[in-house]
Image (cartoon, rainbow, N blue to C red; front, side, top):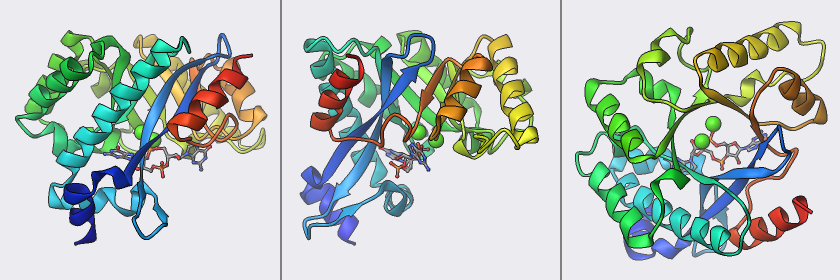
Length: 253
Ligand code: C2E
Ligand code: CA
Ligand code: CA
């Protein structure tokens, strides 16, 4: 398997890109999501949808996920050092990782080795994987949260039909799936849905971030619905560390 070769023998082929998350109140970049890419030695770039499922199925995600986590911490500390004013980096974590008994210690070790403050790390877990939630997962999430790590539910809206069960989960933030982003003011149902999800989440003291924001119309709608944050091509696609830093500098000027 080529994926195994790359992850075990040539991990530098995996590069972490960052997509900014915008605070809709201040208009500033408040955080960024880490998204891995495979810069294959043959010269082409492969998106995560094409290798994350295989990495999960083979268990290689354990090694890859740790690499992404470590790189994200290192890159975040550079943002901090140069005074970019970014509060957090968000890392996608697969259920395969969460269910491993060593994962908690691995995260602790990574924070310690890099000097990363726990408060500056957010873990994203998809809603559908949380639905298969068991007590062990809730317990690990709780432990992370006690350390100060933040937890976000990714692709929210694709799984649960109600927000009720969320109350019992240790969660700070919901990421509304991009399929809920209304394309135009004509999408009356989508409009009602998205603002009611935001309202309900806020009433449960959860922050909301909308993903897949591509138009000004969507951004304005989110502001009106009191959504706290947004992420999407409207601002920029995910960027390499270098390009992310220069983009963020220009953006906040
Ligand atoms: P995700 O976590 O839902 O990440 C958001 C995806 O939407 C990213 O695709 C991003 O590039 C894309 N996107 C951002 N803004 C827009 C927009 O305005 N419109 C549209 N149409 N798309 C937008 P990407 O980078 O290809 O990642 C795909 C998925 O791969 C991620 O979905 C995540 O589930 C997974 N993934 C990426 N990196 C990692 C990782 O390090 N670990 C794990 N376990 N999964 C990862
Ligand atoms: Ca995500
Ligand atoms: Ca998502």
